[in-house]
Length: 100
Image (tube, rainbow, N blue to C red; front, side):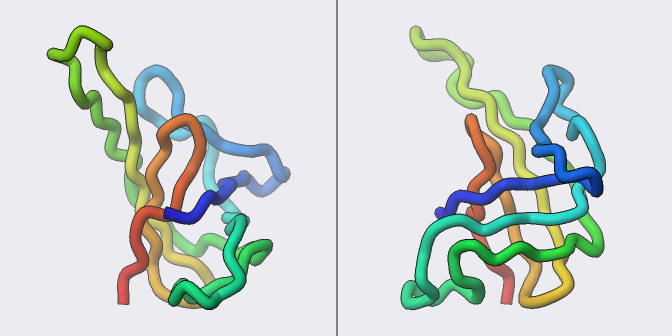
């Protein structure tokens, strides 16, 4: 996965609230790390405009373990360039998959 940052139209970084909802409407995604040699369609530092999004889909995983649950949320975004992306939030946003 590649680290990413999701922002609203005012530049505020977005996360997921305790109810599993986004705390704003995503407008841009900044892709961090990578030089493009790993097969990803964008180099690190690229900032893409988000055209549409679906989700998030919150997940509580491992609720049965002694360590307690791990919370994650998945979000699909379509940008102005390149294929749709699947993002995962687990402490921060990560690009989990690229659809082609």
